[in-house]
Image (cartoon, rainbow, N blue to C red; front, side, top):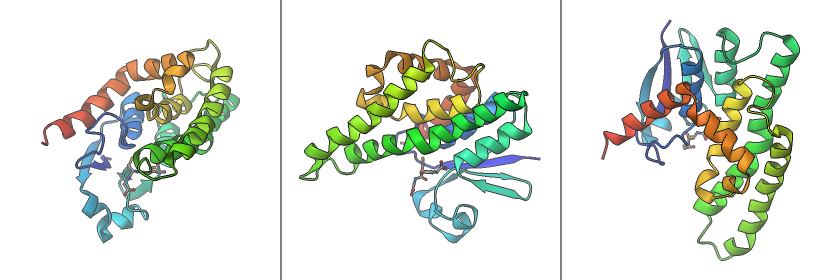
Length: 214
Ligand SMILES: N[C@@H](CCC(=O)N[C@@H](CS)C(=O)NCC(=O)O)C(=O)O
């Protein structure tokens, strides 16, 4: 059955991997599942046809036959559950990998998004100078904890899993700020994630869409 995902017609980052379809593409590439992409404009994302797929008018979405999903966590989990390659066979190791998916999305991503929004959307506010360092330190606190847990390991819990795919994707958003480079272990972890052939294919596919459009 053909898998169809949605992505930005024009990604705000110009296709540099920050749009969240990259993590879905990466998951599909990791498990070797072909997929098609339907590009949507910002306007179309808020119209009824797309809202029927995604109640919050966002990308990505995932369609496979009569199944339609939104939320990257749910989509990557679905892909990982139905195809080998992203979750360990052992039940406990599998549960821990799923735990890391949740940790990436519900513990690590929120302060990173808050920080990104403070820089990009609130940078011109009179209180930005006071708020930004506080928000940045909340990110650093999480990264100290994450780096301590990762230690010298390549991945968070044994072999690369959907938990790592999600965590690398979440951490990538920090790179432009320079904060990631304050944590060499995490910077190296992200670089390992980016070096994976599946990630490279996902990134290239997203960039190709954006680079053909002026
Ligand atoms: N929690 C959602 C977040 C989805 C999301 O924020 N998508 C962004 C693109 S990366 C989007 O569609 N932004 C446009 C908008 O919200 O209008 C997920 O992980 O799928």
